[in-house]
Amino acid sequence: MTECSPGVESTSQYQRYLLWTLQAPSEKDPLQASQVAHPATQMDQDISAKPAKGPIPVPQVPSKAAQIADDATIKLQYAMNSSTISKIEGPNLFSMAKHISTFVRLLEAILTDHSIDRRPFLDLRERYFGWWKPSTTTHLPWEAKNHTTGIVLTAGQGNMALAAHAIRTLRNVVNTTLPIQVAYAGDEDLPAHKRQEMRGLDPKLELINILDHYNEDVAGLRFGGYAMKPFAALASSFERVIIIDADTIFMQRPDEWFEEHEGLKRTGTLFFHDRAYRGRRTTDWVKAVLEKSGRRPSATLESSMYWQQELEHQQESGVVYFNKAIPSAFMSLLFTVYMNLQKVRADLYGQVAGDKETFWLAAEFADIPYAFHPSYAGIIGPISANDKGVPEICSPQPLQTDLDGRPFWFNSGLMEDKTKANNKKYANLTHYIPGHASEQPVGGWRFIHDHTFCMGRSVEQMSSVKDAGLEEVGKKLIAEARAVDEMFKAKIPRRGHQMA
Image 1 (tube, rainbow, N blue to C red):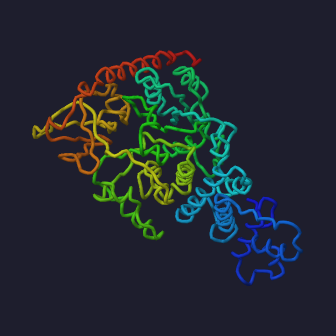
Image 2: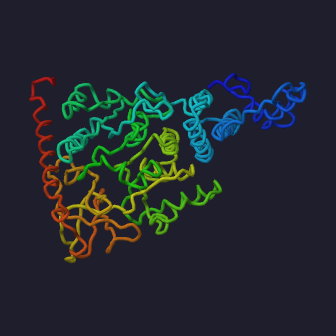
Image 3: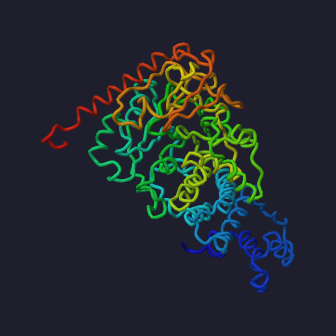
């Protein structure tokens, strides 16, 4: 990384003045004082040194946005040039959270006042996030080439069938019109013939090799797994992006939520809660981080059931919305990507469950507003009875509902149990129990095995998918999954034949 001198052409006189004031007294050169004097002082001296001829020129006061940009630029340059940051890609959440907050102010300023020189911002972006290599198609809010909305998911050979279910049900069952991009980590992750099969699912499908967009030595995406999701969102060409897991299944169109959800419109972000399950208390670590940084929890965090009842998980990241046109949301996504870099996640994943908590934690630590859909996850599946005869629903599919309490989307795919390759049964989508915003479901959650949970105490708690007007949708989802599986089965070469 090249150091940025205070005297470069892109730095204004006001910036030189601020940099000079930040130097230690022993480092200041008294002879430079006149060269770096505050612009207003310098102008007064120039005016007093010359006899007035005609009207006295009115000094041009920089706009409020320009002043904010100057201040933010100086802070970021000083932090980078000082010894407070040794390795920007290291797991230093405290420092990076502060820098992200400063970047938000800088980006807001240059998008507000188009006369502000953007070269200092672009230089700082490169120096702080040099591991990111935006392409000509990457949506950048300071360039705003397009204003598209789209869906992004990551897929490789291991979860290709699940991703195929997600793509085809989006297109053929809930009838989304949004473009879909699939990100993969090189040929080893998704070979050329597999990519060709993916394109056969949707003629408009776009595939992105995520390795082209990041320094692999820093990002570590070849075997990144779920960590790839925020990287894929940042690399995408969409201004408004919906990130989904490969095993996410929608029962309603996701297209209109950018216009309909108030929290999403206000903050540019929308996250969904996980099950309100009391397991390992990850709140202890979050509290320790906030205390060490001298910050109180945000109102969003403090009012959540996760915080008040010390749950294990806050977020289910099977669906995440980002409006990258909003500077705070864009920088929150960039901070999320940072938190999933190889070195950072190696430390962070020991505290929280993988990538899924990093989306809201990035916003929380950087003091950026963010929004959660109010209700925690519910469950969808068939009604059964436990060994005591108590009715309940047991399934691996956590359910998210819309604002009216109707099924919106669920995770873990359309198979009865995606973790068992020999289990070819499809999910039974007949009943559901919606989650609540501020209280545990009656009877709570009961963990069975792997990722299967049970919920329920009485039939009165349970709602029928038919009564929600989604019975036909449920049937079509399963029918589409069967059709996809039959299509893939037909492409498996017979013994002695080569793959085309």
